[in-house]
Image (cartoon, rainbow, N blue to C red; front, side):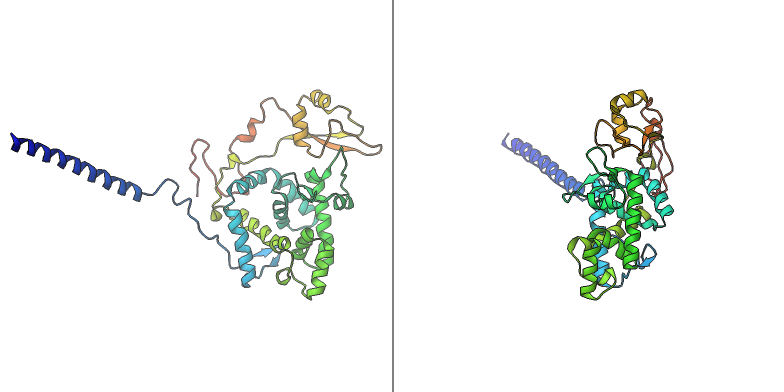
Length: 332
């Protein structure tokens, strides 16, 4: 009887031992398996090409501080996923307008990335009270023809602010002789940059010792240029259908004051919210129009279907990828 009991005990212990070992082995194997998105989440150094130009001017990437300066901004923007993703989505809506105006004004297309660096393509206000897509301070905005008042802030008017930025950049180009220095002056101010050039006896951006923000500024612009021109190379994969498309609008020329924009919107068959969304330069519930002046408002063509057509699959020139709306797999 004792012998039989001992055999049973040994058998039970053997089964428990085998089960324990099997579980441990399975866990080891499981832990060694690649996790979902394992490769997508790798930390890698962003690619830097051998040659690069900004506005037709060569970037001296063979200089170590230039190479490292660009590397720094690429690392930040490649791994700043939430902000970078939103910038890419907004670009499909705003870049066509910005590119058109840059071309008309004779400013290199690369300066659309200056707008990205300034505001992330959004109407934001900085602690220094710089505002709008191109981040003008009020005095500079007025100097280049923009209205900034309690009722109206044309720094938030994409078309007008872009033309004002072009005037400013061309003025800086005439003063400093290069587009790269014009970009630096846009950030630092003409006086500050001129003082640095005269004091250091250096006439190019890459060799100037500047304040921290301006020292990084052109590199930040270049990082966005590289990412937009080679999105997949820098890990950006977005279905064109997921981009924010331009909203179909018609124009309304206001030649006299509109005392109640809520009623105006109702008369147009749209909502007050749509009027304010599409005309962010309006800062009040009325639109005051001085005698002899006029303002052009954007009115949505129709809000009946809440712009369902904006979410269909469309070709996007800023991302050279595509996807099936019913399939989340990215085409590489």
